[in-house]
Amino acid sequence: MQIGFSANVQDFSACADRSNRINQLFLAAMSDQLIFQIGLTLIPGIGDVNGKKLIAYCGGPEAVFSEKRRSLEKIPGIGQHTVNALLNQKVLGRAEEELNFIQKRAITPLFYLDKDYPRRLKHCADNPMMIYYQGNADLNADRVIGIVGTRNATEYGKRLCEQLTEELKDEGVLVVSGLAYGIDTYAHRSALKAGLPTVGVLAHGLDRLYPAANKNLAVKMLENGGLVTDFVSNTNPDRENFPKRNRIVAGMVDALIVVESAKKGGALITADIANSYNRDVFAFPGRVGDTYSEGCNFLIRTNRAAMVEHAVNLRYMMGWESPQKGKAVQTKLFRAFNPDEQTIMDAFENESYQELDQLLLKTGFTSSRMASVLLNLEFDGILTALPGKRYQKAI
Image 1 (cartoon, rainbow, N blue to C red):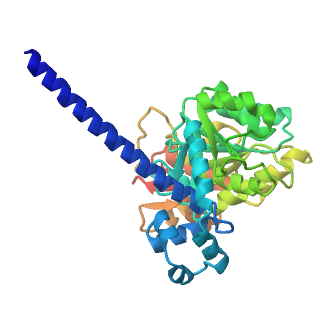
Image 2: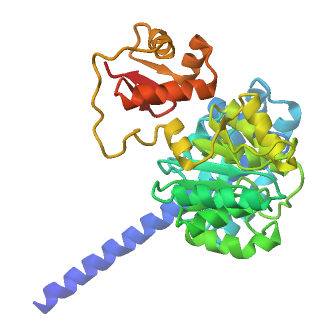
Image 3: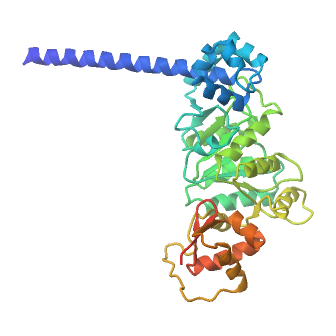
């Protein structure tokens, strides 16, 4: 018995050694791959679009660095400067330094081809090739909203942040913002207070925090949420980095809510980017003449954003709940339509469903008029709201 037990122990030890060796080889291979992935993002002037083009032509990040000059020069949009930088390969040494940094800080690198890369962001043409993530939130949560606004938040704006997150606390949404002064800060704080996970997108590397006043807030966010950036360590929060940060906020979300904004500012830029990504954009209205409501009122007035006053408006427009939650809707089969309802039903023609934008285009209705009529048709079970601002005929 003793000899047999000893043999089993030896067999187990041998298996364990082989398993550890395989794991080490796997980690080494992953590290090598990461060095090339990170290195590609460090090539001066390459950009995310051209970087992904190089990968597509060459077959992978490592293949990009091993490709011959003649082949690289034939790739459309890739100039001599980029080719020289690729062949120089000095960026790989810097990439190795970054790999050591993220391993020490337990930072998760997410390449745009990885399955855990934020899927909403992946669908944006200019999405970053690599992002760095620290935290425990699910970046691919079922419902993700962005809350942005002015750095000069008023009591009105602070109250709206708390109201919105409190009303959404049972929805399990992920709240994304830019961890800047003002509305961003109150969006993150309010989300944590409501028990919602919240992620801050940074305009610098994860070795520092700007503004420094939000350091304690960032620590709390790592416990229920996290921090995301597409910048490597030792990157300062320079002015040109903030538009890049804004595009990540816009790309990660289902809906972007502008709480307060002046006529010009980062929140309006983020709203424009979100619109270009076909994201739903909402804005809280403010009093005429209020400096930090002018931007929101402008977005609503020019149909760049839908007006939102409470979370119920957001839920309805996003199709996150039925008009009579928890109750079956009984269709009224023999119901007469008023002129507005008939116009909408006619717009469906022979199709079973229509997108909201198409209905607005076909009917010429304003957003508020359309929302009112659609709500009545939903209550009577004639239409059903679907995700992505679509409506389906129930009869």
